[in-house]
Length: 89
Image 1 (cartoon, rainbow, N blue to C red):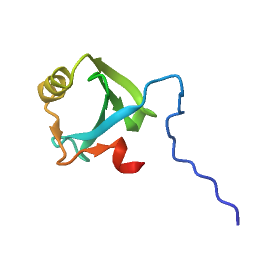
Image 2: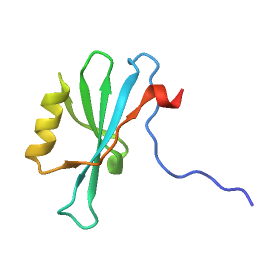
Image 3: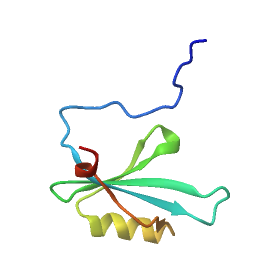
């Protein structure tokens, strides 16, 4: 029997700079809890993506502090740990 992967994933864009780290943030007040991804690049800029909406870009930030503040204001909490690109190479 043939199976097909139906899980959506973002298309890779080789023209974009690579990511440096990934954090997962959660809104624990929702049931089930809602997750967002924070991707940081080597220049310090960050993007907040929604994996439930096919990795739709929610917010671009010029710094990690700006991204963190935005998430905290919306009552998201970081899940402990950070995944770096170097760990996957």
